Image (cartoon, rainbow, N blue to C red; front, side):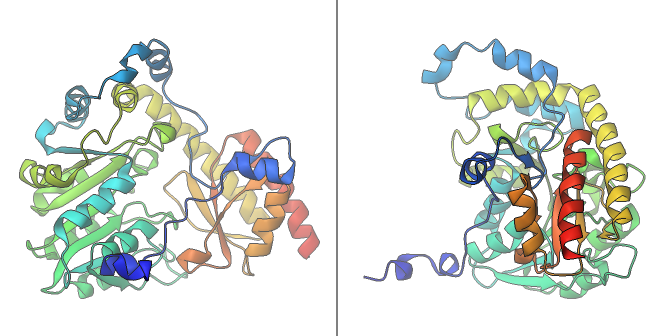
Length: 374
């Protein structure tokens, strides 16, 4: 029996999402004392102190109980923070799950799913896995203001009567590029009401407010707009796997039909609630990241490298030569970077904006590696 033939048609076309290296496994394999993990866009500043205290005070007798399936208190906290109806909120085991859930819920065979070249890999995986037809929009040229970013005109041209879903990340991972308010508003006005638009704002908390619009402020421009966000990045809760989507209550009610029951565990709900309420901590993270991002970009450019503009907690670096040997050499020196070959960018590596000591360790190792290639 051919097991492959038992899978659904969309699944047969899939390759599994690559989550990157596990630092401890690599450390042990290479026999290194420690690793500098700059490949997964994690938050080196950590979670809010109030989150730490809340988790310390947990009564682990609750381990035998199921969590609140509706996560009522967390949804109320999110609703209050963003001034939305709690019924408009859908919770997920990370925003990754929500991006897939949306496609699984609304996309049928023959429906087209639009996304950008060099966009987040999950967009294409969700389109194919749901049985939809992926429509990849060619990215902008590297020579422009938003090098290799999503092309607004190309997105508009890609819309058709068969378009069911549009994925757009703002800012985009891995390029770090973004759409300004007027550009995004103009595009939303062009999307037919028969389609859904998902704006992935995983890196929302890191942006310069004057550059990148808050998609929630644009919800009146399209009735089927869904905004996804995560607690994994600026909130520092990556290990607890929790994200949320905000849409109309009617749309959220449809998503509730397919959302897995108890998909957000008790401790994730608790931590996320305290994280959401600590606005000051997120602002400290945003400010610290902006300072370190600018410093790191300057240091990398001083090495003669092309560094893409970024509004996230990462920068994309083009070495203008195959990046795989550089990635491997950095790994042997204890520094994990993210390869971009799977995104069609074989000369690039994505670098998380770490704390200053992490960035200095990165630069020290990178200078050694580049000197060997000089």
